[in-house]
Amino acid sequence: MVRPIKSVVIVGGGAAGWLTAGLLAKKHGKEKSGGIKISLLESSDIPTIGVGEGTWPTMRHTLKKIGISENDFLTTCNATLKQGAIFAGWVDGSDDDYYYHPFNAPVGYKEIDLAPYWIKKKAILGESFAQAVDYQQAVGEAGLAPKKITTAEYNIVANYAYHLDAGKLTELLKQFCKDNLGVGQIVDTVTRVNMQDGGDIASVTTANHGDIEADLFIDCTGFASLLLGEALGVPFVSKNDILFADHALVMQVPNASEESPIRCQTMATAQEAGWIWDIGLTNRRGVGHVYSSSHSSHDQAEQALRSYVHKSGADEGDELPVRRIKIRAGHREKFWEKNCVAVGLSAGFLEPLEASALVLVEVMAGMISDRLPACREVMGITAKHFNEEINQRWVGIVDFLKLHYVLTRRDNDEFWRDNKRPESIPDTLKSLLELWRYHPPSEQDFGGSRELFPWLSYQFVLYGMQFETDISLIEHSLTNTALADRLFAENVRAKNKALETLPRHRELMDKVKEFGFQPI
Ligand SMILES: Cc1cc2nc3c(=O)[nH]c(=O)nc-3n(C[C@H](O)[C@H](O)[C@H](O)COP(=O)(O)OP(=O)(O)OC[C@H]3O[C@@H](n4cnc5c(N)ncnc54)[C@H](O)[C@@H]3O)c2cc1C
Figure (spheres, rainbow, N blue to C red):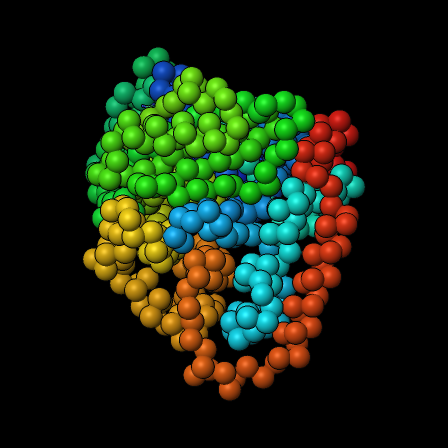
């Protein structure tokens, strides 16, 4: 007799728990005839992590898929539109050291890879790679938004993601899932995990609701990893020998006024022993210092954060409260074991660079929803594929994050020198860097779908960090100069049009509050 999957319990009500609940319930919830029972169990005594304010453009698709209106989301979460990241001080720490990693793909990227043509002509073009192949840097420097008020919800002129208040996002998702998707909420604390013969989880014991059973458990308990890590004993694979950040200091800085301009990129400014993120919301900024405690004391790190906030124009920087969070860089050896799958911090976390955590939640929750096993008998096969694929993604994320550190010329600081030590660089990244000495990153370099970060992102970071690719040996293959020149010119036209037509970011966010985008 087969054992159908008729009930799912998600343990943990942070962003991972509620995003997973939304995606799962939309497709399988009991609102559908023959659907399954989806419940979310969260503790009122154990707080959510309360950070995670930068997303990827994928979040537009995720929220739309769940059925949330973009206007509601933007106004409820004090959210703003994010067009990528600016990296300041990562190359050599000089005053004019910065580069953009935009969300737009290079102009014409489906027809031709412009990177080698840019390398060939960069002295003539006189522009950075990001400027030559895309216009989002110019839009960012002018303080403009990626769309107009007349652009429909979730539609784009330029590609964008969000900056948001993490606590408010969780509340919005919770309300939506309960009111519209039939997700049951149980507020209680898990005190024990009970096992069946054969190693599956039978139930979780709660303080006030007794034992709660399910066919599938989703562990979204954050760093505790209560089910997958603690109960099932799936080992943790540390990556701290590659990515050294092990703490973050977090601060909320009120905007000076309701008219304050809002930056449309995550600002990532290199520090002696890490980097500071700066994220603009409609009412405040979220600022945080990610650092290695082997390279800086907590006091020095806090001093660096306060000094940054002060220099950025916030006089109250010295008095604002700071919260310290310990980071354990790494991930579980497996993510799906027996009848339990982990999503979010319980599966792993590296550091906030490039906002890779929430997007992985979207990917993992989407995969669980798309491939939800019909019965327990086939769950092992789904789990095997899931683990292989997600493990590959982690390899790619580790490589991509490490790439930001290894090309630096900041040789005065031990943290940055240590980051360049060959023994701290994964072999996968070492061989890619070797390859890219002679040709730019291309889709073929990554062997299939392992990549969370597309090859185009590697180009933006590599050339932003002023990596030199010697194209002399492949120059004979660059026969599409006319097309490349046409596309470089097209980018200039697109830039001029964007600068003429796009509104200022603050102005757009005010209009969204007043009128909203056209609903879809
Ligand atoms: C410093 C920092 C900065 C970050 N910045 C970004 C960013 O910019 N972009 C990005 O994409 N990601 C970022 N992240 C990651 C992001 O914050 C998380 O991926 C996201 O918030 C999801 O967290 P979570 O839901 O897995 O865990 P949590 O928010 O910790 O939620 C855990 C849940 O489990 C519940 N729970 C725990 N134990 C029990 C129990 N015994 N019984 C019942 N319930 C229990 C808690 O009550 C809570 O509801 C950042 C993380 C850190 C640490």
